[in-house]
Length: 521
Image (cartoon, rainbow, N blue to C red; front, side, top):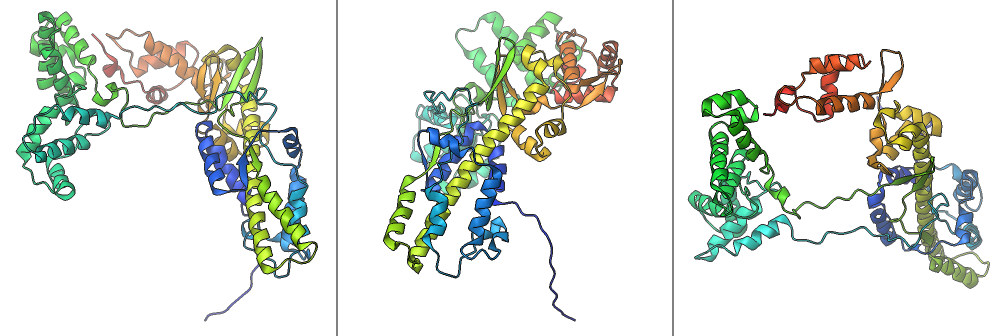
């Protein structure tokens, strides 16, 4: 049986400003300018401009004042409780009665323009260059295509086959597509019918291209191609060719033993002295496992690390500043204010007509959106500064000395308790952000770590244990690398009582191989 009933419930919803702020907090400084440019293109009421003294007055508005303005806008003309409508639904609420222009003009005509630039941002050096360097070079595939012109083609279809093979090579320099897939691509995209033998013929030609090893189907083939290239070079001596011949034999016939570092077995099977084997292995280790990485400009986009924060040690006192060199000043477009003034003079106190009301509401919406975005940027800068300031004070000894062993155990909750922010907000600030120090540019997430107790009962950071573990492995005898059990014993002697499986976990997190794979001749 169907029946209707009326229920009432209280539900929390994020306002557009809160959603916008959360998204902006996740954006690193490197791409903040791109996000601002997108907003400038989408909203004509927002524009760039120089910061004036009046702009800083806008920062004095409290959140209570802003809330009163939002409530007044929601109540409209008659104030009958429409301000209780959720922010997410407010944009869809249209007043039924004629609207007085003054109800909208008063909120905008007398307000100071908003700005998000802060005095805490290292003096506001406006003369700094606000653009990122852009690499303008040929891509890896373009480099290969220029070499196609050096091949001798009898007909155009052969050139098409060669270009299709080059286009199938991935960003590492490998051809991981099967012949059948390349043949299908030629038929469907180029209307060219080819045979597998033709693919193999032109692939062999392309595998002689620069960089050496390009076009290989796997690592073993790539290493062999690079060794062949070295052996055919005119500046390679006779002794070097002998060593390269041994290297080629190892890769061609004993690749599995080589990858697993079974050096004694290789020495016996190839009947080599230890020095001969070491020289051959050293030649292999000089080869490039990713041929495309040897080209200065491959098809991948170039990534730049732009620090979001800058910490300077000024005679023992740490100074923090935000990096805002790529963020332009933002203001409300004065043309939109002038449009409202023109409507006010035209109507001269009477009630607006429907067309005038639509125009006013459109302008109001654009100005609202611009104000919300500027305010979100302002809150982003303030939240980021407060969070980083708490991290700096919490890890003061590290930022003063640069000694990683002085990093204190720190989790998101520690900073959330200090700043009064939610843990998720601190997480958004720490994600994909970097801080520039005199000891290098560090990832913010690297400062967060769990704690463990040493034998003295003191809490130490897991980062400290990882640093000591790295130092021990760096100093080990590479002929007889230390096992995880021996590493555990050495850490216990230094006062860190941890299990062997924990040592293995930390070693894997540091991207350090097991003892057998760390062995060297």
